[in-house]
Image (cartoon, rainbow, N blue to C red):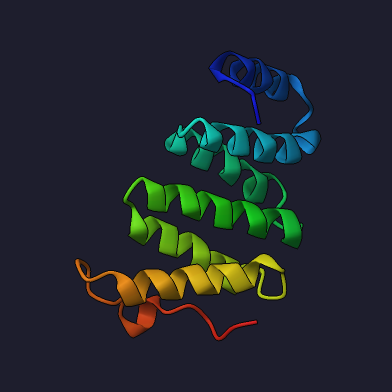
Length: 128
């Protein structure tokens, strides 16, 4: 919670030296720390490492995708965030984070008056 920019930089270097098989969880933690520092673009990138490195780990991958989506929403990039939420619903429908992904996707599309609601092709698969 108290990690500053210097500490997260140290973490980044340490993670990069780890074997790839061990990096997903630490990248998730790094992403959370970067988000607390309001470094949302870096946080989203760190979060996305988990589903790239461990796409079959439903819990980690889906949670990281939702967190990355939240960061993209903070960066005013709702279409990219919606894609991540749909990815959770498509690839990890039984994961606990799928419920949040569906709720976020629906909230974004229902309350966004500046952008039209996505077309039927953009809709997520029927849910968990």
